[in-house]
Amino acid sequence: MSEFRYNNKQLCMKPKQPRNTKSSIGGNPQPRKDAVTAKQQSDKFPSIGMTLSSYKDPKVNMKSRNFSPPLNVRKSRFQRIKDSITLKRTAIFLTALILIAFIWFGGRFLYNAHKVFGGSIFGFLSNTKLKGEDSGRVNILLAGNSSDDAGHNGAQLTDSIMILSIDTKNNKAYMLSIPRDLYVDIGKSGYGKINSAYVVGEQNNFYSPGLPRGGMGQLEQVLEKNLGIDINYYALVNYNALKESVDSVGGIDVVINSKDPRGLYDPNIDWSTRKPLVKLTNGPHHLTGQQALNLARARGDSYNSYGFPASDFDRTANQRMMLVALKNKATSSSVLANPAKLADLSDVVGKNVQTDLKAAQVKRLYTIVKKIDSNNIKSLSLNNANGVDLLKSYTAPGGQSTLIPAAGIDDYSAIQSFILQQSSSNPIVQEGARVVVLNGTDTDGLGTLQKNNLSKQKIRVIKVGDAGTAQAVSSVIDLSKGKMPATRSLLGKDYGYHYTTTNPYLGLYDADFIIVVGADKIPKTPSSTSN
Image 1 (tube, rainbow, N blue to C red):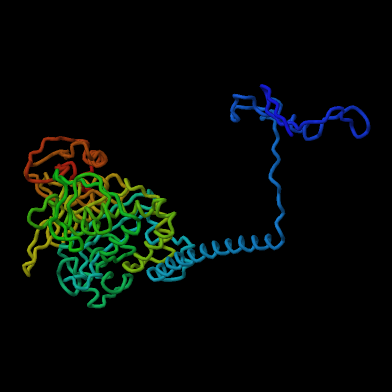
Image 2: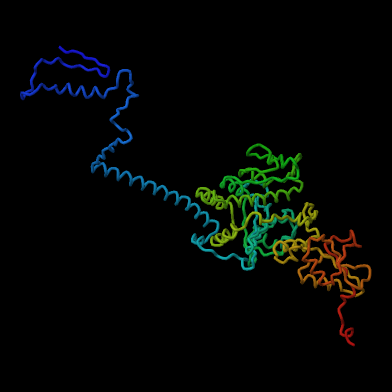
């Protein structure tokens, strides 16, 4: 039988022991082992009324208690070999994946580069100086057509013609659009719109030493002759290139600044979306490739259009704006650091661009262009040359509506002066003053003599005439309103600093300065200087 004993600290069960029990060695009675163990355990048990979660053993310091780390079980040799093989396979797979990606993107780039620029792919490693770089000016002809649209009437016509002129010494540039309707002499084929020059050159297999063969050579010849500039390179691009280029870089950002408060609207239908060709509010916009292409084509020539008061000139201005935006995006870190985007961009170039630039020259061109801030790229048009329209409408013999220089057919002197003004570092040329010379004496040819002297100093004389009254002393009528200080200073030096703002010839001449040549400019003869 067993008996239960209770106290206020513990609950335990002890077996009943016989009286006068001796130890096995004859000493005093000893408690049994199981009884001692139970006693020790009961001392550690919480008292009555205390919950287990609130009990803390006062003999144990939890903060100082040390926990043994888990046992490091040594893996078997077979397991170690298996893990090593798995790690090596993963590394080999990742390396192969990277290598395949490099070969794929790099291969696409190199293939397209060779297709467009020709020569060895190692040309991209060199930095060949560009033609025109020694003089500080590189001119590139950019022409766009719709050759990618075989069903389009006049797909070969270069409806977009632009000169990109780069100042390689001062990291500046300008883009000048040439209107497609400009009436020009296209060599043996006679006169026609300049957008047909490429087609004529292709049909006649044009060739002239120093110029490209075919249509682009013919177009270069016409532009060099009429504009008075040297064209160093060309690029012929179809319109689809703009769409694909914009998409390949993830779109472009532009700001619409139409004079119409509503923005831009051309209701001609974009058949890919069945929506108006262009409908953009004034302000910032992010354009997709299709939107950029639509804006590049829109002239606002349909009923209810708005925001295109200058029609084709507005179209070309928008093209120049988007080219700058594309340049900014294509040279951004988000594109340059993305192999997939670069490969896509190279695909676009490979499919849509023809050029006489070589690989090494492209590398050099990129090095130069990336230094040019977008704020240092001027956007120019011949219908607004410093506020002056250098063109006028003309009906060609065949009844076509065309454009010719404001000074008259084949008179490109004002246009050439405007272009020279953009390219020169001479402050006189940059100001581009229009000067009229009037002969105030009876000496024949004195006005022409003064014109020749001024031309040698890069001053543009737009008219020589008769002053109507005799003048003893030469004078300069200054109508520049203080905007042309360099020209004013030079004319003052030549004509005795006799300035006036009073203009007796008001309404007769559109000029910045009128020089009235007096008797003091009559050349001295030997007899008149003798004593």
